[in-house]
Length: 85
Image (cartoon, rainbow, N blue to C red):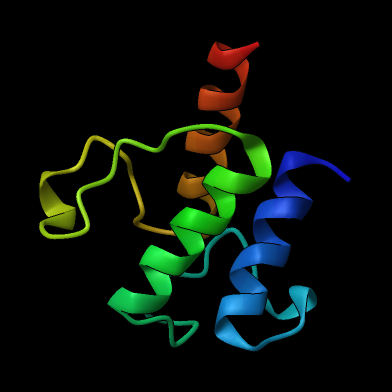
């Protein structure tokens, strides 16, 4: 399973949707993921890939990590995973 597929599966699980319902253009808001769901998604992704995401849950707009849509999240995770290895 690719990073893309794993991230989509984690986000889909948080949104209680099928992975096929999640596209790279989807925003978390489109998927019905609230701030708690976002934090849970971040934790699940960090655990899955054994990485630390530079994300401030108290002030998401001040984070260096782009959560504007699923594609941006995937790109960020791929970059962090590449830096780790």
